Amino acid sequence: RFGGMGRGSTPPPPPPPPPAAKRTQLPSRREALFALLGAGLGVGVTAAYYNTTFDLGEDSYERALDSLLDDDKFMDAVADEVLYNDYSKQLDGYDENLESLKVMDGQLKKLKESADILSPGTE
Image (cartoon, rainbow, N blue to C red; front, side):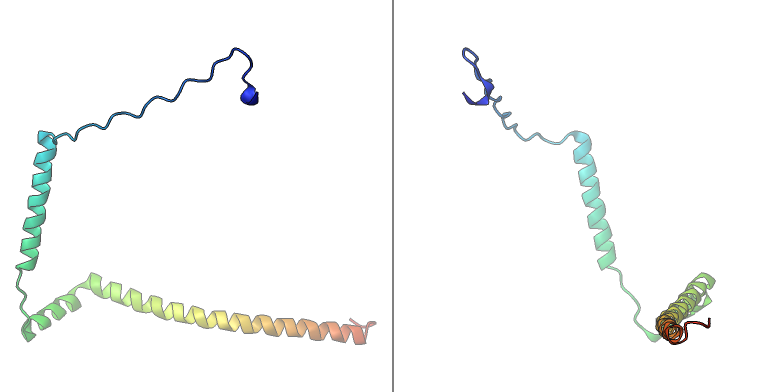
């Protein structure tokens, strides 16, 4: 017989049946309270956001720009970003220069090897 079962041995028992589906339970008082609180906060914040009116006049733009230009942290961040962009552009140029130097170095090595082949006695 296959499976290693000899005479007189019984097959293993069948697997247990799957658990019965439970009925859905109502949330606890705490869960319901926090769900309502979250929904209320969401509705309140959304209503406040969409009911906000913005002054789109020219004076408001000037005030906003003045407040940004007067903020030292903002101006430092802008300056850092500009300096970083300049630095990264310089690095790109350095990469191109490095590649051209590698090509030139390879060509010089080949030239030296060919010169060594032509005149093996001098180094």
